[in-house]
Image (cartoon, rainbow, N blue to C red; front, top):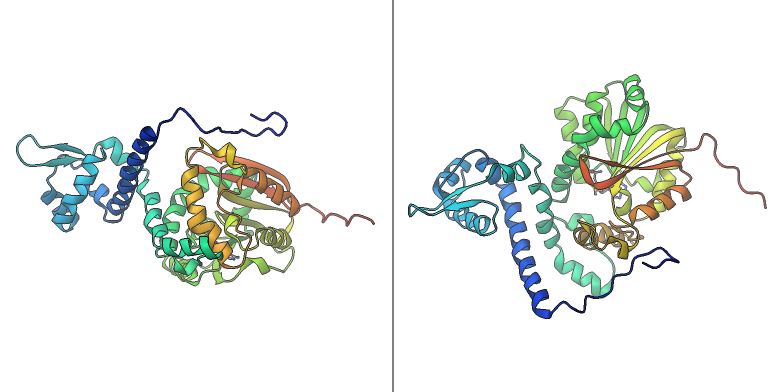
Length: 373
Ligand SMILES: C[S@@+](CC[C@H](N)C(=O)[O-])C[C@H]1O[C@@H](n2cnc3c(N)ncnc32)[C@H](O)[C@@H]1O
C-alpha cells in the first residue's frame, strides 16, 4: 500500500514457477471451453431440460430437448468432464444427471447464470476487427456484433427488470408514489426496452420514453410495447447526446449505458438539462474501482476489462469517442456526476445485482450562478 496516494501496488510473484503458471493457464483453457459449452447449453435449453429429470442417456436427453443426439452426446462429454453434470457408467451405458444445485444456478427457472456465458461468442465474433483496432486504432461499431441486443435484453431481465419493484424503485424515496400519480420518465440507451415496458405496465398514469442509438433495439422495444398493449410508452431511434429541451423530465434512468458513450460528459450534461429542478437521475453502472491496481482480486474484473476491450470501449472509439470503458469505476463516475452538476450523489449496491452500483443523484433546485470574474 502506498500511504501517500492510498493505492495498492501488486509486485510480481517471483516464487511462482513457469510450470505452475502454465498449469493455471491449462485450467483457463478448460474453463474457457466450458464457458462456450455452457452458452450452448443455455441457448439450446439443455439445462432447463435436464433440471429435475434425474439420470438420462444422451438419447433420452436429445429426445426430450428435440435436439440432435450426436451433438448432445458430445456436449454431455464436456459437461461431465467439466464437473457440471454427473456421469454414471456402471451398467455399460453412460447416464448423466444435472445436480439440483447446479440446475438452480444454470436453468432459466433458477438464477439463469447461463445468460452471461453467451458474451464470449458475441465478443469472439469481432476478434479479428479488435486485433485490427489494436494495430490501427479506431473501434468496432455496434452493428458489427451478432446477437448483442438479444443477449443484453436477457441480462437486463436479470439485473434490472427482476429487481425493479422490490429493490430499484425503493432506492428513491417517494418514487413509487410519484410513478403511481403520473410523471414523465426518460430511459437513455433503452436497448430492447424491457425495463421501460415493465415500468409502463406497472405505472399506467406515468409516461415513459426510451431512446437508443441502435435501430434494431428500438424495433424490438416497440414490438414488446405493442405486444403488451402499452399506450403510455414511446421509443425513438436517436442519440441522447443532443437532448436539448430543458426542465421536462421527472426521472431519467440509464441502465448500463453511460460508460459506452461517445461523449459521456456530454450525455450527463444533456440528462441534467432535460431534468426538472430537483428531479432524479438513476444510473446503473459496473461496480469496480477507477484504479486498476485496486481491481486486482475483484471477482469479475478480468471479465469486465475483456467486455470493455471487446465491446464497451471499442463502440465508443468507433464513433471517435472518449472510450471510457466498462471499468471507468466508482471514483470517476461520482466525479463526472458532480462535474455535470448533479447533487446528493448516493452510491448503492443491491442484493439481486452483484455486478453493478446504483447511483442516485438529483438536479439542483436552482441552476448554479456563474462564478463572477
Ligand atoms: C449496454 S447497452 C444497455 C441497454 C439497456 N439499457 C439494457 O440495460 O438492456 C447500452 C445501450 O446504449 C445505447 N447507446 C449508446 N450510446 C447512445 C447514445 N448516445 N444515444 C442513445 N443510445 C445510446 C446502445 O445502443 C445500447 O443499446
